[in-house]
Amino acid sequence: MPIITISQDSYRYGEEIAKKVAEKLGYECIGPEMIQHACDCLALPLSKMERALRDSPTFFERISSKKEQYLAIFRVVFFEYMCHDNIVYHGFAGHIFLENVPNVVKVRVIADLEDRISEEMYLEDLTYNEARKKLIREDKERAKWTKYLYGRDNHDPHLYDLYLNLHNISLDTAVAIIVGTSQLATNGHMEMMKKKLMDMALAAKTEARLLEVFPEVEAIARDGEVFVKVKGSIVQEDMIAERARKLVSEIEGVSSARIGVVPSNHVPF
Image (cartoon, rainbow, N blue to C red; front, side):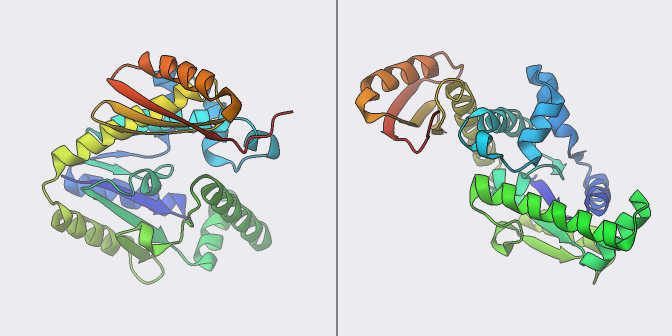
């Protein structure tokens, strides 16, 4: 059965829809608590993980690798958790992390700004102007974050299989549409999905380990073989490649590694 991701501007409605969809399908439902789960698994401070995942990077974070390291660590736990399948996920960046994974139904739930303002005024006891400014600020922050990390726009319809406007339909109708779509979308590629997720988890694990040492790293994995691109000084290419190869060889699940060194844009002080 597929995984369903639900991305939303309005947290309350997204969570409510996710829970109803999960209940109807008999799936597990998980959202922002995935961040706490990742911290529990790896003994990391929740505040630092939340900041890395939710805030756009400061100038100093852009020239360090700490934020990317936390993101890689989160992806390891996320991909391994998604291997359970039969999950409705309404948390952080699921539609981006699972963009090219089979058996995933990606849903975007939106509400008109005026509807969101009314909701925010009620929930947070804010004036109209306070609620409006808060929502616009949060939307801009979220957009900056996604653009910086992935070069993507959260509102790009190509990221989703379903794009639902709650101004035009009820929550129950939205739930019925998502449930129906997920049942039709099951294509039998379960083994392919799990293999893809485990490859992505291993790649993320490789990036997390190397980011402890190198400021810019990219990795992909296939059946235990990892392909790594480390950005650094070409003058030190052999030394960088050897050090990266040694670190990667210590990672559980890696059978072999290919390391490439390319010029870095990193500007140290």
